[in-house]
Image 1: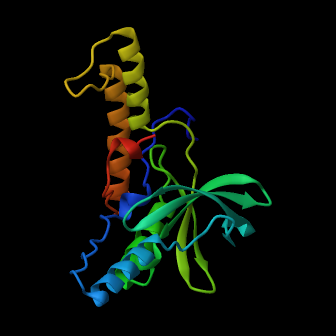
Image 2: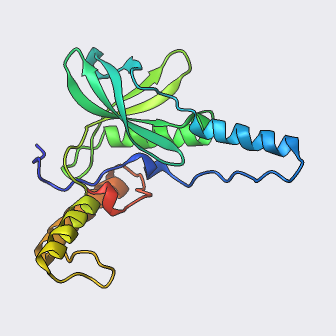
Length: 212
């Protein structure tokens, strides 16, 4: 079983990922370009799930969407609660802008199935792959991680070292103890190895925010 304090390699919402789609600026006096810009922004803001929505979950449960945890160019991650068990979970779903793109949906489904079959102490487990009946929206129900990610840990250490007058890197961030770095990176590498070789998927967004 996974120890609560273990650093876990997370597949956060940007793991499928990309960047914010560019919005072409309207030319002066061009009402059609202005309309295109407005529609692009509206599509960017639209979300497939809203707070309070209820979707089918694992083991006959339903999942109630509680709050938005993170968002990126292609997808969003919510905190959810499985009902009636009350067990918290994370729900990852594509933005509506990309939910009708066959290749993107196929990749999400393929990676979701691979991760569902994978159990590794340093990879966030996928508990359930769901589909909303009315619009065939696919979503992944995952274990919800609690605690600090690596970026937050470094920020806390930076503040502590600054208050104590300790040594920082040239960029002003705290120096993590070498023992910590080695332990964290060994677990990160183990998680990546499992994802790449066993799940046959690629983690596309490895960064401190995705290591818990």
